[in-house]
Length: 152
Image (cartoon, rainbow, N blue to C red; front, side, top):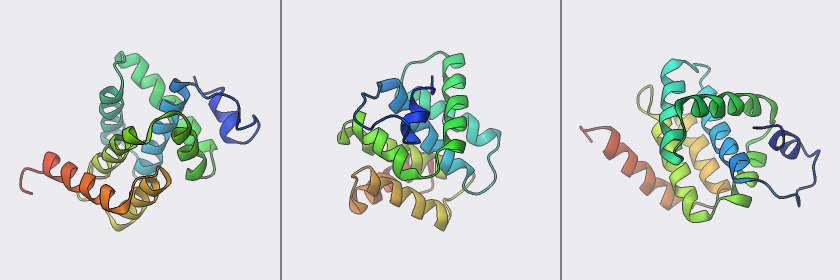
């Protein structure tokens, strides 16, 4: 699944080569994994939440979701910078859909409690790289907080 994506992200295949939608979705999943691993506590709750978020993006069987997350974990470990992941996503996924990616990131950041300052900075940076303004990211964050925290 990620065999075409990884060489592309590592600069081994020219950027002009077409990227498949599935490869772009693996890049989205890799962003989720990168955020989940950021606090060095990448456990089962984060894995389960990533699986749920991936299932909301595409109708895939549970084994396909697990395969996509496993591919994303490998891609995330190999790709040195977030800019390459977001560039691959921007190339294939319309900007209007990038707000949904940012919403998934905010949702994931809240998996183990309120988002940390680092998670906030990371999601804001990813949103910027995806072409989402700081104001739009803040609105998405508020929406996710309201949807995931009944006391908000």
